[in-house]
Image (tube, rainbow, N blue to C red; front, side):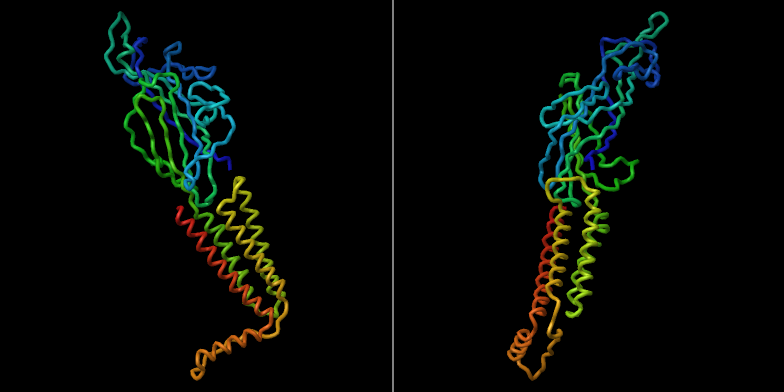
Length: 368
């Protein structure tokens, strides 16, 4: 409903600072923790005192959009800027980017011993130019992905997230080659979406990495909870045309009840969908369904009498085809107006229903 994607970020940065010297480093990096200033508090506290320079990471999102349109639609409102080390607020973001929101990360800064130290009296001194500083961050953020729901519930959404190191020059960033997995092996499949087309663009000599992925909605829930019940209601409403012509009460009650049940189902489904200024594919289905059953009810209300029952003529071997056609034409002309209206509505609504189903599901399969 909020068009938000909950993302857990794990960011690891490593660099060397020749301005620093370290004393008595341990082989285990977790024992070489340095205090990190996050907001107004310092965490975690380690054996080192004071603060050292460390990168600041900023997470932004680019508005996504339905794959059938190919372009995203941005909401024109400012979002808070959340960095992984400091919380800052901005009012405008260039290039139609939005920020992922203020986050409070779990960060850790430690030293990884890469070279032997120099024995200075009672301490071992390690140069910063020869040993790595490693910055590890883990935080969660609600990333806004502007969804295009024109094909809902058969839609596919494209979302992009950028992670930027804001306080270094471009030439200072180098990215390793990373394998991409659409879903983390330890996580169960997402109940509503299938994640595909995962791309991670890491350009050397650039401080920004862009993660792009596609969300394909799983339509099984709507097929069994929405489309199948409405199709059954269509069949029940249309079957009222096959009741005896003189049974007006059963025909009208049967068609009107199915119409009311369909309207109730539509009202219930609207409560689980975000409001849009355009018709979704599911809305088109319900609009046609209501119009189809409404036409059925109006037909029954307009036909409340008859003069002759429906009979079927058998073709005799001694009767030529031309004579049979003349008999059929004579029998049709002798029928009452109500019978002719009933036959016309039965054929017209049946053909219209079949055409709509072919066009509707043809578009679904072509876009899916």
